[in-house]
Amino acid sequence: MASPADDRTVALSTQLAQAHQELRRRIREIRSGITRREAGHDALVTHCLAFCAALTSHHRGEDDGLFAELLAQRPDLAPTIAKLVEDHGLITSIVSRVAELAGAAGSPDDAPEAIGRELDGLTAIMESHFAYEERVLGEALDRGVADTGWTDPVFRFRDHVG
Image 1 (tube, rainbow, N blue to C red):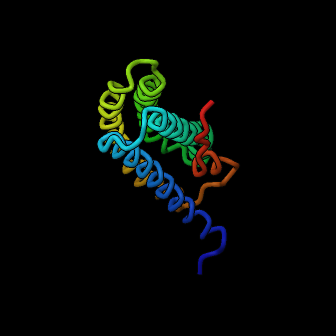
Image 2: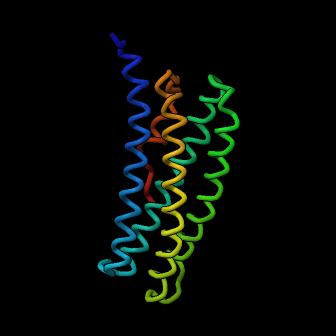
């Protein structure tokens, strides 16, 4: 019979997958709004910037908390974590371009297409990254990783802008 602590560690891998699902949902919602041109320029900017803040907060929480804890407990994961951190850098550069485009003072008519192209690339990279991360880290989380406070920024997004 599993102990509550065992249940909690299994729940961490589930929570990681759920956090990724929420980020996937948010980017699909923005992309869909761009395609349908439902939202005005200001709403698009707000949604894009909020998404960028949420994704950035999630990755910082992983880099500074989850990954540090995993490395302390599982040094054998160093090459895997290095790859994930490298992915975060690539994703950060795309997120910066999305935020820049969303916040640009240029023509509102040009912004949706440019943002859409960046979001398409970001979606593809995120999907690959999330699938890999869930597979390799989910197993480590299920084996038991102490929650030293890293869960909040990884699972609960700070998506306010500013």
